Length: 225
Image 1 (cartoon, rainbow, N blue to C red):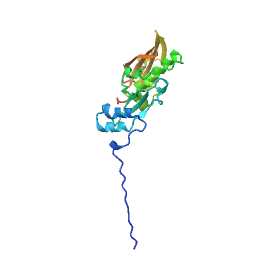
Image 2: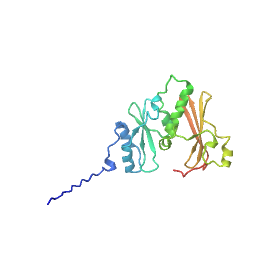
Image 3: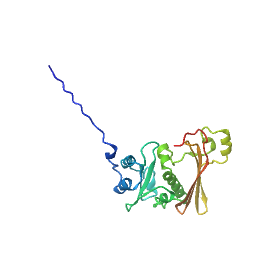
Image 4: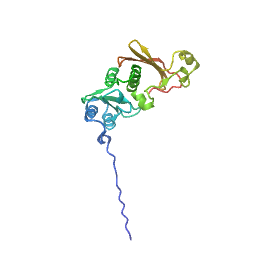
């Protein structure tokens, strides 16, 4: 009689806390994520530590900055949101969470471009950094769902069309005093918000970024996330 022997091998995946951390993140960035950034839970910190990503070239920031910018998820679960940090050439790390911190990223603005082209470049990068979560989650090139006219909003009622028809215009960058003023309108499916974005660039510097919500629950909207 032949005896059969069965061998069962169990393979266990390591828990989240001991998974390998991101390999492309420099030590100063990892120290910031592990020890400085404030997370609500340990599982959020563990998730962030092995999902740090260098997004400098993806966002085209190497054209305007000597710094590197990294993203990491700041909590586990949906919807995913990310935090951004900048790594300076001196090894310092700072959180990009307001306009002042964002404008400091633009420390290597090219001097071989026309002023209007520099202004447009700074506008584009300011929008991307300010609206990174929308860019990452919804895929909008500038981090906003740009609309050029009221009719671009899906499911717009006749009443809303009349109210917004003369308000919403295509994106435009125009001279303004000693600099340039950029104005664009966007529509957000979550909550159906119609938003006006105004960015003022002076002396190769983003002087102001103003966001105004003009209307909510407009068009075929979804629930706020």
